Image 1 (spheres, rainbow, N blue to C red):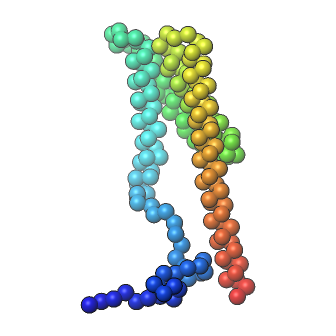
Image 2: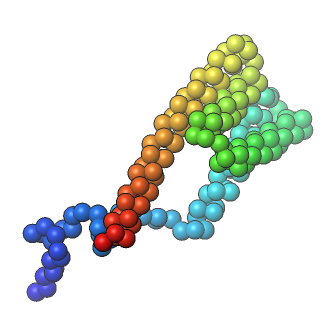
Image 3: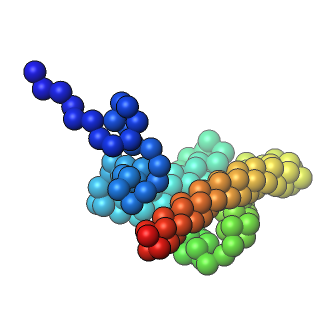
Length: 168
């Protein structure tokens, strides 16, 4: 019968500490590079198509599908996709708060555009847009701060480990 060989550390063989020999705990990447590329480009395109269909269906108010209605939907798809890719490219250069506010404004504007086409009062459309924009902005600020703080802590720990390894 085979037994596991204990390694230096605790009596059970588990390693403690953060020395250079300690394996680094990172999140495993379960998806391949092709999958990430597909999601990076496919998700915005699918979201734009769904958005365009939604805009066109709200605009026709249950009536027949017309050429003008189809053109309106396709233009909405194009505008959504262009804005999505522009925000994704520009957002990387902004600070966390600006990046979150930009996505919040995009989400609020997208909802406001659809909702105003349904024939509701303008005040209702604006209120719903502002509520969604605020919720998206707040949640993304929280996400960016927590993920950035974790990355900063990992980088500081790695720098400290490298310095300790260098001095010994």
